[in-house]
Length: 146
Length: 459
Image (cartoon, rainbow over all chains, first blue to last red):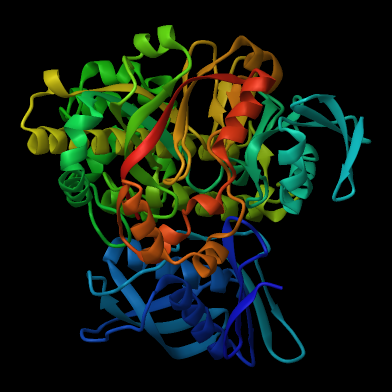
């Protein structure tokens, strides 16, 4: 029910709840999990493809005890870049994923009138939020507040 | 009479009131007609049930006729917590702290405005940023932001000169919920606030030019500046922007990490009112609420300037007096309780109540009642309430076609995106007339005037 768009292992469920967007992500490893979280973020946010003219790169360290909290922090960074730095992260480079610590590079593009947004992600909620290690790899359920 | 909705047995109290009795003695009251009850989405009942299981509750859980499922608690929920032994739950206030409505009344008539509606809406679109990435005209330092969130609208009007002293009197709690503390905000919340001050945002937020379509209570309408049908009004719907969202996110995370926190649902995680973190959240929530009041006041300042420019008239001839400003998502100490209103409006006797509809239908001005104090902790509905998700609305409704249809009807819209427009289409919401009829029959508030849209800007 409610399956509208599939992109590799991302499922956006539009009927799960009235006020939000629920995303399910299944991946083989943590690197893919990180990349697909970003893909989901972009899929929900943008109306068209990125016009990638100017790129700014930032390095970030995400250190949290649990995988779930690291994913939460990753989304918080994406929202922070959008709202405070006025940058849209379009690609993430993974330098290392060790000891509960992710060293990442964020490839960003300035938010200008040329970027057509269809939604503004304001928060990742705790509603139904989960990130689990499964037999096939990892599964995440993310509910975004728009 | 009893009806069963999604395995929940509801007892009919009267035409607009239904009781869900719980085995633990707790009660959930639904203020709705039978037709509305039968069309509420399933999660409303499950989430209302979860709210009734929260510790520290001091009375009934109230569900309004515009309810729809939210995160943790439904949008359209009111409940009282014990003042000293109650619990603080950031998720029960919601993300957009003090998302609210503001109504301005002009001295202009439809014939004055109609010929200039496109110029007016386009100018407002330039002056009041909507959507992603646009910044507001008001740049403040961290020190000034501290003053704004701790002192509220008073500081914006009396120190920064953005507004009229009489505006303050027409805002819930006079535009300052206290005590509020800047130091309870994270650096991220502060940075998001600094960037987004004086912006409308996106989602269901809007700024609408309307005309008076019907007057139900002449005496009260006149008292609030509404003289006749065709008079032009301005309605503003927005909240605490990224600052409020960040406060909710930050504290939900912090609450979860506390050993003594209780979570009926993860989104409803709560701590005692007297706990250090509970107190800290209330200070941060009040700061966010004040930011929202300030935000709507700053937008009002811009609206007045744009009207002056477009019509070439001074304020005396334009009017644009503030009728009222009400909060939707808030927890406040009122009387003996800490009252939570998530997607609900305060409705104290003789207080103006603003219920905004979709951009296709219309909006209402109502008055609060004594009955609301007895039945719903002085609360009423806040809007029409969604009937479909934003994503589903975008799939079913074509934004550009909707824009054309509305233009043919004489409603000029300026939106940051077609998708944003589609998700706020009239068919994505309940019929506002039915919601107002329900709260009126239930005695929670009574209609004073009804407005229909002429122009709208949205994110």
